[in-house]
Image 1: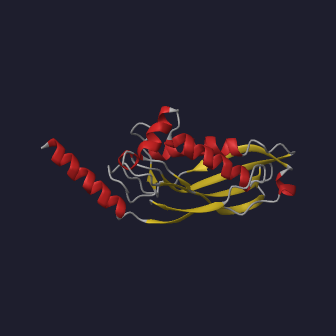
Image 2 (image 1 turned 90 degrees about the vertical axis):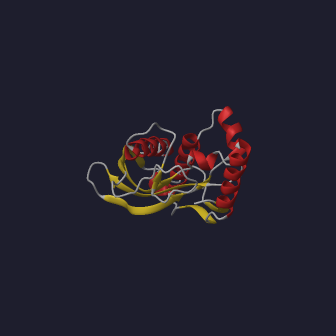
Image 3 (image 1 turned 90 degrees about the horizontal axis):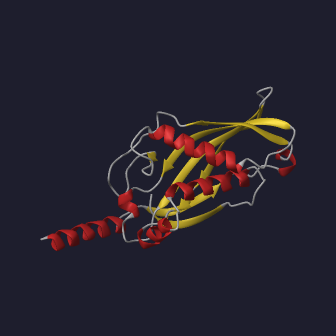
Length: 204
């Protein structure tokens, strides 16, 4: 009975994966001029995770929501996502060491990581969809130096044996997302390598 039920569940998972949305995903932004950003110095990072974004705790492969996050304990997902983004943006912008203090304001529009059900599936699939807008203001005068602009920081997620092995090495979804957001912010600010690109993958 147990083997039959397990086989049925695996069959359902395989069918669900085969029917998953797939497509082209991107890390995309309008790279700023290094002649401009080299004069900036980071004064503050402000992160807004609007309460209008939908959150899902559904134990499914592909929840339909703006925010899907499971590695932190059950709690306020907006606050958890905000802390992850703030730390990542701070790290990405730490190379700003000019004389003009600036404030970078981030508004999260999507933070869709993998559920554990998706990560534990035996297929290497999935996408971390991290999208946000970024604006730069002069910290002293409030002048808008860069108006709010959309940044897509989408990166392949890992699942199945690949992710199990990665976790044994200390890699987590949080570390993967944080590293990619930090690298994307540094690329956008022209103080790090330009990591824009696209990929095709099965996932959401």
